[in-house]
Structure formats: C-alpha cells, structure tokens
Image (tube, rainbow, N blue to C red):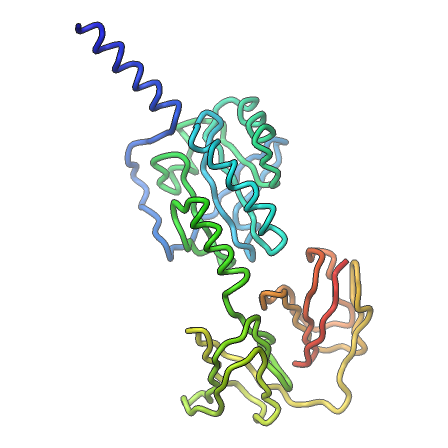
Length: 302
C-alpha cells in the first residue's frame, strides 16, 4: 500500500511539473497595475541583445512562458491570431522563455508559429533573474504594458486581452493635434468641454472635431471621454505651410521650416520637430496625420 501511495505521489508530481511551473516567493517586490515595468536586456535565439524599453511607444504584452509548459503552449494558440490582428495598430509581444535548452525553446517558437521578433531567454530555467525581477511565481505569466511603460493588466487571458485591445485601438478616444490652429480632431465621436486655465468653460459639445478658430492664442484645457488634457491654440499665419508627397516611402518635404507633429490614426503622437524634411522611414505603412503650425492634413506611408 505504501508503495502505491509513493507511485501516485510521483505520478501527480510529474504531471504537475509538466503542465505548469511555480516558484516560491522571492525577495523582489510584487509589481502591481500602475507600476513602471522594469527594463531588462536578454539574448534572442540569434545571440542578439534585445531590451524591453526599446518598445516604448507601443502596447506590449510581456509573456513569460516555456516550451515544456503545456498551459503556455495552449495559450499560444489563442495569442497568435491576436498578434496578427492588432500588430498593424501598434501591438507587440515580448516573450521571455524559462527554458534551459536552446533547441527546445527555438523548436517551440517555430512549432507554435510565434512570428513576433522579440523572443529572449537566459537559458537558466527556473533560475531566471528576469522572472525574479517580475516576481513570476507561475507560468504562463503575462503583463500588459502601455506606451509609456506602465503595467495596465496582469495575468490577462486571451479573451480579456482581446477585449482590452479592441477597446484601446477601436473605442478609446484620443485627440490631435496638441498644438492647433483652427480645429481639434477626435478619433471617435465624444462629448467635450474646453476651459481656460482658470477653469472657466469656453465651449462644450459633441462630435469628432472642434472649431477653435475663435480662441485667442494660448494654452487651454480639454475635457473629453473622462480625460483631461491641455492643448495650445497657435496664432494663424498668412501663408500656411504645405508638404509633399501625399504618398511617401522615406521622407516628406515641407515648403518652409516649421514646427510639425505626426499622429497615427489613434491620435498617438509619432514624431515632432522643426525641419524642412521629415524622415518617416521608421513608420509602419498606413494613414497618418501631419500638423504644420497647427493645420492638419493626411498622408500615406507606403
């Protein structure tokens, strides 16, 4: 009877270890939603060093997994289509493997079709310092990190991940430009209110754009979609700056040296500066908006 009990104990222990991974509590503080995601560097399968903060400006799913973790492998089946769906909008995945055998790790990446370029492993198994840095106590373990490097979700499953991504990319309202001449634009229809810096309400309404041509030059407060932001009303110019071409591959040329801002379709500020030529080679293909001295036009990055 004692032998049977031992055999059963060993059997269930092996099953548990093969299905997932858990580690004892470590000395590192637990990271919570709202905390800054710690940066780290790690080696990819080709031996190149990659680091998390290189993806600042993107929405990132930091995914701790391993080839021997069956729940991780099952989760991959659902995560891959989400990557293909939302990556064109700025979503990225950074995978950290707790494998200790490189061939097992690389073969799992290929087998599960994990096509994103950010894969790293210390190849130290349970002794991963990066897992300790994030106080990872089990696999799979995920952290959703916003464009400013702040943790906005922990332990999110594929269903909640898609709900969050859809809300961020297709429902959440943003505005542009931050420095405007005649109009402000929203990425979705929303209620808004414009105040001066003393809190006096100057206008309110609902729509996808706001006429601010009647405001004096200066700084203002914009309240919309339960958010509060600031924008600057710029002085009008007699000769508005123009640019070309409307479909560009590597650069666009401005008619004179002016301040510019480039925004994505989500209203995210991608680039800003003061120049005659603007390098857009690093932008993903798609539609963008360029603000020249506060006047907004659109262009396509090929």
